[in-house]
Image (cartoon, rainbow, N blue to C red):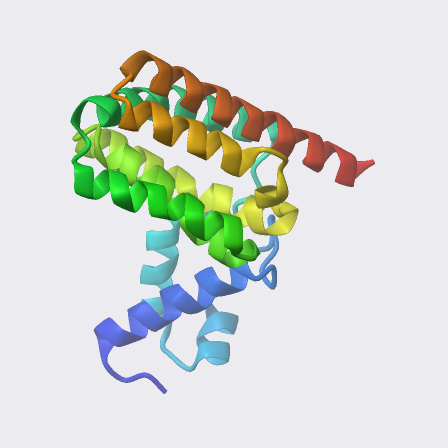
Length: 207
């Protein structure tokens, strides 16, 4: 049994989140504190704190694993398109040569990796760009949305979408060339393509 309170909360949080991400805890499933406490080997207090943190991240709603509707995903994508296209413009204006090199490396990693490494490279690509907006509120909003997209990206394997890495490279080149308008337009187009692919995949699995 995990005795330290801080470690117990961290362990409970990671355990629940991992079960959500590996599909063991599916969307809509009720989270039962007593059962989890017995399963994990901690008291109900760290379970309760872990659930509260996951609620803040949008992954649990009313003690159930969040199961976003198609409309929810559309709204999230619309928000990302607005915020990340703005961030891409800022990146084209402000990104340092060191960060540009790191951004370019994510594309190289994506081209030679498998699903998980492609996911990690994709996340870093977007994170590097989002950081350039230098707006803590925007970054916080996008971080909360990111985990929800992660849940769907694993189930749908959206990183197999045609031309995804090519689009990253186009955005990277626009940022490298300091073309703010083009960088923003390409990011908006990229996320719009992501949205259409994701929604089409969800619809096909429901048929």
